Structure formats: C-alpha cells, structure tokens
Image (cartoon, rainbow, N blue to C red):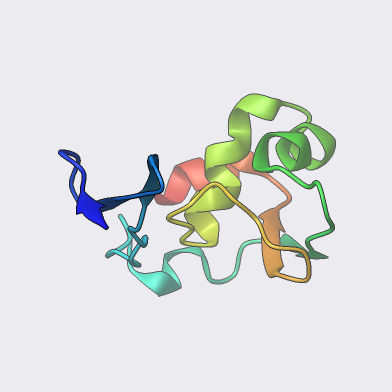
Length: 97
C-alpha cells in the first residue's frame, strides 16, 4: 500500500481511497440556542437531502443550512433512520444567530 500525495489517502491497487473521517466541531452557537423554537421531528428516509427537506418544509431549498444549523450537522449527508428536527419558522432561527 502506498501513500498518496493527498493527506490521509491511501493508494490500493492503483485506486486512491480517502481514509478521513469528519469530526464533530463546536457549533456556531451553544446547543441550547434553539431550545424553544417550534420544530417538526423528522426521521430521515433513504434519499432524503437537506435541500429537499428545506423545500418541502420551509418552502425554499436555499434554507437547507437552517436544518443543518439547528441539528448541529457537520456533514450534509443524512442517514436513513437518523432523527432530526426541522424548524417551522426560519425567522425564529435567524433571530437567534
């Protein structure tokens, strides 16, 4: 196994395989920043994406970041079965950041 010139990647059988992991980082706001806002509790289904959920529940796919922010998500990838919350009112989220 050879090391790639890219950080934390290995080359196996001529294919470059990234071997990094995303670590949870400190959120922009304290975890209790969004306590008390009205939310929808949602269980992620296969194929769900933040932008699609934002379009469905917030009427604009550009508000995907609000769902990520209130859930303290580091990665945009969702896992089926994952429990998240979706803010009902984007103004409530904006007022707290």
